[in-house]
Image (tube, rainbow, N blue to C red; front, top):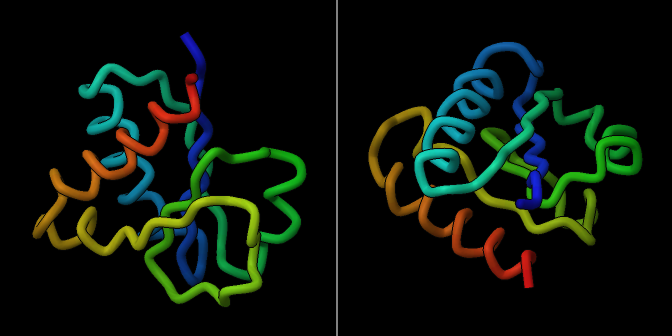
Amino acid sequence: MKTFRVLTVCGTGIATSTVAAEKCKEMLTSRGLKIEVIECKATEVESKVPVFQPDVIVHTTILGQKVAENVKKFRGLAFLTGIGMDKLADEIADYLKTLEK
């Protein structure tokens, strides 16, 4: 089984990216996926992507369109509010499952 890599991003790399990372791992694992997650702040994304090589980025802050253009991004606000959290987890899981093929 493939281990998918998720990069969670917030403004400081401390608070909301950690919450998003925990929810992501919990919810995607419960959907049958093997997940590895790291967190970072928005200004670190460009340096983290080539090293960590994430399959997706889940961000709780605004990222420029040019940032990590080759990596699929999901807005992670639902992981913080709880509103639409299952829908977001389903969308991420569905996308990741397409990468297994």
